Amino acid sequence: MLGAAVLAYLAIDPFGDTSDPTASLHLEGTACERLAGLAAYLGASDDNVNEFLLDLGKQAGGISKGRRALADLARGGRNRIPGKGFKQRFDDGSVGQVRHFVGYVRASMFGGTDVTRWISENLRHDAPDSPDGRLGDAGIEFAQDLIAGRLQLADASTWLRDHLCRRAPSPA
Image 1: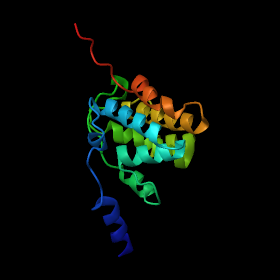
Image 2: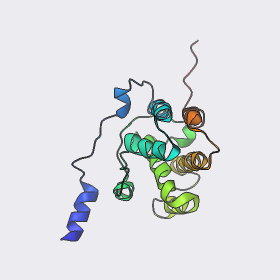
Image 3: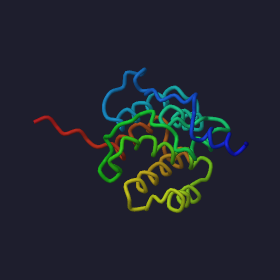
Image 4: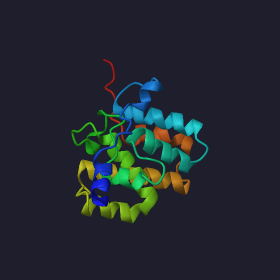
């Protein structure tokens, strides 16, 4: 009976919010650009890195802030900001790259770099040289640089745009 309840919890989330949080902020552009816009908003409103990373995980990837976070990560989160716009090296052709990136950001808060990479390669089967493997590494780098103070909250949005987002073609 307990096993069925756990399975139901992991498979069905009746409280899951699948709305795009960037719509209420009136952010436009690709999913990658909306992620960067959300990071700019959170970077200006959150008091510290931990709060920022928790809010980014919740709003962009549907990952709970509390004890449900590990279950949300195991389930893969939710596509709260579906779409594209990532550089080709990070683009696997899906509309779930924001969720994927943010999942690695949040996972690295629990396991750090080595454990998160091990899970990526051995449990998720994201080869290091694949788009998902590279995006996962970028998520780990982003979170760990913020936590270590090598990246400031005020610069998080710019980091995302510069490192992850495809550049829009210049008007002719």
